Length: 408
Ligand code: PMP
Image (tube, rainbow, N blue to C red; front, top):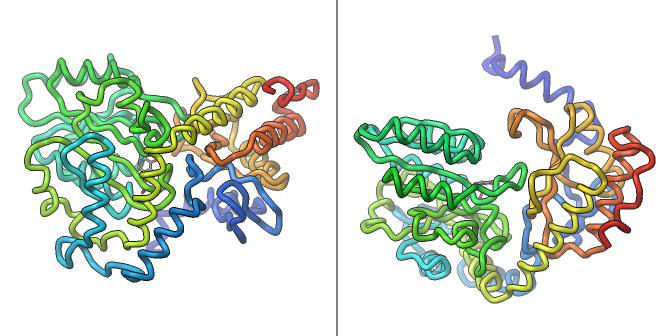
């Protein structure tokens, strides 16, 4: 029997999806025209599935800084910071992030996935307790698996369930760490962070917030949900990524805890992998400067998100609980979701197809992520295409009116 036999069920599902042309899991961008437009299969396409929330991947100054660093310092560091040394720019980026979040300490990782893997497997260990929101991102679950703490899940965004579970641990020794996300990546819903922070205070736990999708999106200064909810003082650890609003790749954790730097020689996903290349550091630093100084960029993102959300909602599609830069439409079954996604792509609109078990409530989703760089015309066109395809597939009645007129 082949070593791959254990994947036969997955292979079966994948084959069924691959029969659709184009295969939703093998989309290739032949050309990137801008941060909101590309060419897929020879067709000019609106990109509405990128997580490029501030549109900074194509920002001329970010590119310029990156190119200069590439010329001056080369293509890569070829090693880990612990074994092979840090570049001054790694430290400078850590200082920039610490300043941005108003924290003492920062550690930069090579991806956001590794930041979660590293922090969760290191901060808590044998005899400790990790209390995770049930809808946590895979990197949070994988971090929990890599470490040795007991893992407990509480119902998604349910502070009462969290409270109950922590109460059971009240007299059990060991550190307790609650982990939640700012904006959840599938439906775009926000954690009830004020209530969660109150539980944390009462029960004497630590609190970590993954602001991957909320940094640069929420809060007066763009620091994320903890800032927007006014509970930064209750959040012990913030993790995040450079691969969304900052438009590059990498991850980080900031904190105020004394002795933080010992993690640099205890955290395996930090120690045993190559550090970020200087060109990435340079564009990330520039993107952070832009995020800090350009508040209208965030306001544009928010108004684009509201426009898409209201447009789809008024069409009668099943969108999430509130507007956020992630706008997802839930559909009844997988086959319909694949056909819907495909028809949108054929019409020149790219977004993400999210299928169970990666989705909440095991429902297939068409997941859009909005950018500050989208024009109103692109958003309106996206709503229009959703409406047309929904009617063609019988998801909405043929009498559905012009959504653009409704949101104009
Ligand atoms: N946390 C969350 C909530 C995410 O959605 C993601 C990526 N989608 C990550 C962490 C990992 O980030 P990265 O892409 O930098 O590995």
